[in-house]
Image (tube, rainbow, N blue to C red; front, side, top):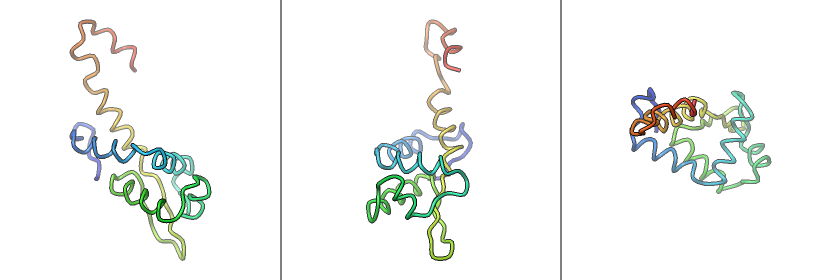
Length: 114
């Protein structure tokens, strides 16, 4: 899944991305890649840091890549994984908070949420 402007984020896309993040191991992998920054990590180093290795890591990376949260690129003999999650996470947050307190009888409560 690819992300578009936050106003274009459909319920279907948001659900798909939240589903991709619904695994502790995938969330751990994504957090590790976010910590690594733009340079990313080799698949081996990512496995070492997260404790997720082999076919399990490959499976999780496929799901995270499909959700548009990470990239993988070949660099020499290594596969480098990097997070794309920065904008995606903001879009998910915007999606959840877009109509914050819209149906509330106390419209001032939105100030409490940012």
